[in-house]
Image (cartoon, rainbow, N blue to C red; front, side, top):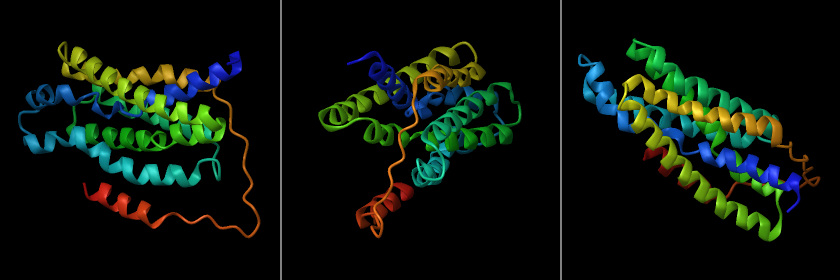
Length: 211
């Protein structure tokens, strides 16, 4: 593999790495509940669950726009900026409603990022290399989830606010994308050919939304 291909691979893997960053503050839930004793615990749990609700529509929107209306790099960078800013901002907040708003922003950012790792693999690699990258991407994504959650656990043992700083790990991915990720060539759709979304995709989306 030449140096340029290695850089592209590294950049794409950095996107997979942050895709499971939603679990970063899960270990800090009890600490956050103790910091806001006047708020019902079920409401406190929204800090962890609210982003998931915003991931769903932003993932769908990102998938529709990527490579069509907006470039892949632009979407990845936008998603990472929202991931970092929305993820870390609650560390500086005392108002719980503001924390939830930041978590929503974080969810939007993560939703934008979520489909782009696989999309970039399909655009930038071919044949067996593509299959290998998709498999490795899944492994890296889970490694990232473990890393983010462990970092959040370590930081929250110092102070509940610090757990949110775990999202700053996304800065590394942002820098890698900025300097190493190329914009895939735009593929023109054949005239008169319409690509239809398989019906099963809608069913799965509805089921995931309900879940």
